[in-house]
Length: 254
Picture: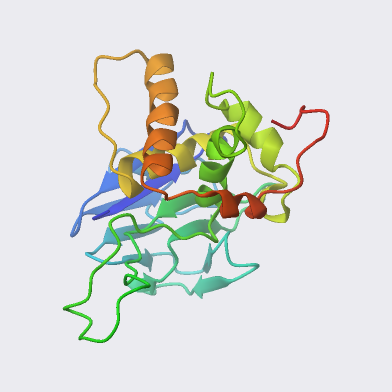
């Protein structure tokens, strides 16, 4: 993946927005106004008209905090509480997380936040021996097996790996229910699963679907294509089932 994906969920004072930024591109966020347009509008009076800016680079992204008074947090949802604090007026703070949640202070019970999926973290072939880093073979599909998106992928592939009837790929609600018992997924929502699916299909596995398909057909086709490629190339294997929480013996968690 080159560039980043920024997702502003619904409920932050505006409709949901998803942006794709290539290397060198920027997106501004804040309350916005006619004279101060922003790409990510946060409809809350505690947020500055121009609160900050996101800058995509080749291998990471940077966050500029344009507020004079408020610090912002960049959380790593996959990192057991790991976070960075970006102080007021800090420009171009490099963010190392592959998946981040940017949190802005507000008077609301639920903090204002948006998500950023960063450029691929590139890994060396684990079987490569010796040679310089430049000469070594890189993995074709660079996935982090500790990330929530990988859990979503394993849950989608589970019926095939357990030799069940491959009549249908698990639906988004079924994935949410299947992962509910995992400590990292207790608050996982259907919208979050859909975001992870989009990230897997569009950025990690680079699956190209026809544009003329309807929304429902495209979503279903995306799930099927992700599962097919993951199984075909051994990206998800039987040993990965151990990452999932224990299954419900009644089958309701499938």
